[in-house]
Image (cartoon, rainbow, N blue to C red; front, side, top):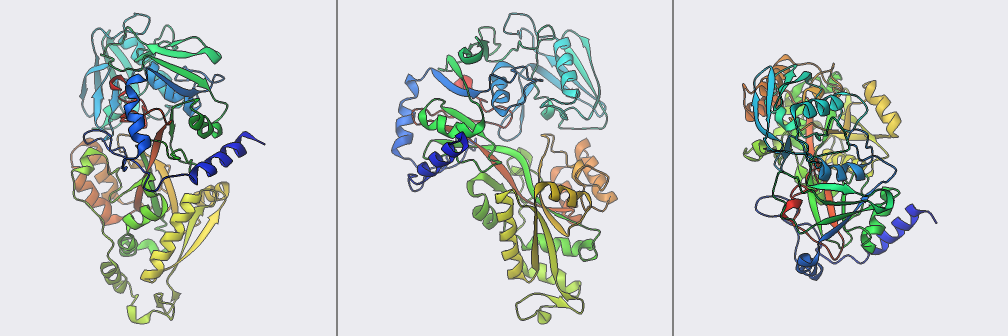
Amino acid sequence: MTKRMIAIILSLSLLCALPAGCGLRLSGAGDLAGTSGQNEAETENESALHAIDTLKIAYNNTDSLNPYLAASTMNLNVISLLYDPLVKLDQQYNAHNIIAEDIQLTAQQCVVTIKQGVQFSNGAAVTADDVVYSAKQVLAEGNSYSGLLSGVSEVTATDSRTVVFTLNTPDRLFANLLTFPIVSEANPLIGSGRYVLQGSGENAKLTVNPNWYGDNKSQIKTIELVNQLDKDTLIYSLKLGTINYVYSDLSGNDALSLGISTQRVPLNHLVYLGMNSTKKILSDVRMRKALNLCINRAELVGSTYASRAVEAHTPFNPQWAEVAALSSKQQQDFGAAAALLEELGYKPANKDSEGYYTTSRGRLRLRLLVNSENSSRVQVAEELKKTLKEFGIELVIDAKTFDAYKTALAQWDFDLYLGEVKLYNNMNLTSMLSSKAKLGFGVVDNEAMIAANSALMAGTIDTQAFIDAFYNFTPFIPLMYRSGMVSFSRETYFDASATEQDIFYNIELW
């Protein structure tokens, strides 16, 4: 029996034992990490916290712990403990200085001043040259951080504590991209993080870094690195207590809760409905707006991703502080949608016997392209089909294997498509707003839309003004932002404000 089969069998047996109402919960004051009712297991976990000084986490001993060579998610998670970045983002995507003491932005440059006294774990000072060296690793292709600095033309050190990033275009949120690990130029395996590596292979562990610049109050003094062959064994190991803290981005519908304490992790992964505006039926913005008005995001999220996503009423992440402060909510409104369609010649009196809009050209029918290998996305497609049928639009689902799906996208062979994009944390939508851009499938260029995006990036208009411009054109329809999850074994629980960049975001306070 394969490891995959063992993991699946175990997960199915555990799912049968799930207590009713077991879910997610709030993590601290204002830091959303889900919601949950109390149960005995959680009470036991929380009361056991005081006795836990060792954490056991997964890693791959055949993969590197050099940030710019590591490939596995397991090791990239470990790296956030060994290496500090210039800044960290909290769950609301606010940037907090870590190695950086000060960040000054202009339209052409980002000038970073490094804190005095920050040392690597070997006691050597962190200098501007180390930051430049690390940034150049990011700029090279083939590492897990490639793309973060794609808007940078040059990075230089002007003195031992000052680094200058020269920007290709203005970016008011450029600081949100300075989350890459800072390594020692002399030895890239040395970082300045909260913990330091001891041993190797099956005997690898992390211990508290005595030279860390901050105040590590965590009761976790040792972190054992437990070799895992692949992610399929993680559920099994978590259940047995071989490891006691696991992260998943849930892209594969992993079932990591299983009655164990869990917390939601915000992701900047937008699930959206793309539209081919070159097709006559979708070329008029009134049709695109009508489709947007048909969608009930609360029902869609609840019936498909449940607690693994949050509704997206704007193209931006709803947990981003700037969006959370707004009241932008796209309510389902069949009446307003019907009024737009009537302007286009689709009259309610002309619906056929099944309730679909018709004209002399026939039934109002749209073809939706979806990746058949993503079960959650297929479920979203089915829910959209039901909703649009209720309104009077026939949706034909065109489910293709991922390779065929990508080919159809590249050829613009669709009316609508379901897509997902991981946005960079400067919230830049440029790649989705133009036919010339990487993800601009089906988009017809609109000068006002592109100008509004540039103005938002430059900071000359605010987020609400951009959202208004976005819906005036409606190049695509935001549906939801997916979430990840951290899970604890039964004897372990911490109030973890995990983020996508650092699942151990506040471990120094555990």
